[in-house]
Length: 409
Image (cartoon, rainbow, N blue to C red; front, side):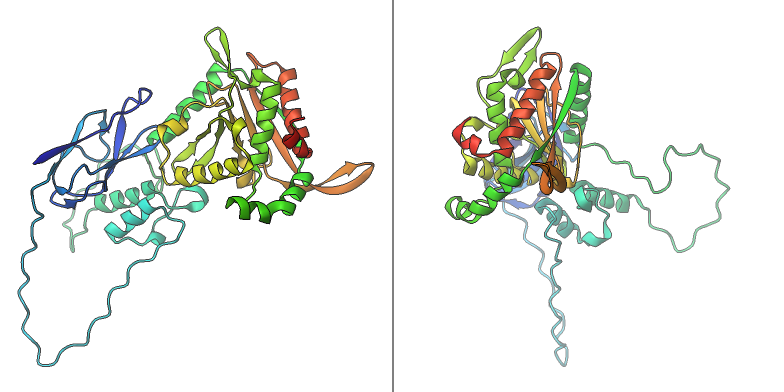
């Protein structure tokens, strides 16, 4: 029986997708639920599973094609059998058996490579060290491997001897220098660029700064780190403290948790906190729903899960939609100070930075303390400077005296 494989229904906010990669070729056997196709949207990479066991008969759309919901992608025959390989004639037996050849070792790849990159390298017999990575910290991405393959295919084979050719006609100088590479933006990167431009054009963004002494949080983490991990099977990081402090500050200054719709201000009486995660494809912001109802362990587990699934491209649309306030942490890359850009329709975003030991004055004495700069960017159309500064100062107070987070004071 012939079964059609179509593009799954895309959410209303997503009009189309780009066919990123096929994992099978016509004639290959396929197993139910195996990943057949990767589709890239402006938010996530969708995996299209095999609907039934069979043989892939026909591929109707190709890599790079733009497809929409319900569009036919391929045909599978559930009754066909994969073609058997032609028998290989047996070679004549030598007078003395040759020594057995050592099995060819399977290539080993660095553990930092994603599964998709490993698969592409294995399928094409490539050495990861021969390809220059453009991802974070020089990590190899799928686009890097594909560009390398395209470059190899485009290079013509040089004949042993070439006839004399007439002098070439002078051509205008190319727009790029030799050694430049032109790579199309991914859908996610293009969407990020679009949203950043929209945010700057449609909001009146200002940023207020403050610094926070994290000594008491560090002492608390050291004191209970092992017990916390034993009890909850997750490490006690910083993010849970920042989420808790942000939620408490938003409760006191609800305008910071609001958004603009036309000429209306929409106040949100819930706290869905976006947690920015950097991936090889770009920045994504999964949303921690009802953060005010989560305890420290729930938040830390969500942070770990979001980070892992974001880098594997496994986040869902539901996890990336909505949000009333965002926290982004440039400090993991060493940033000391920056001005985060709003994530519309949200009206504020908190930027964390690197934690550094610095000299500060306490009770007239110079002491060394773990300090962090915080930045709160906000939409000045609806949030006055007084509310923004007060909200950030509340976050500072709660972080410097974390016991108040437990007592709600």
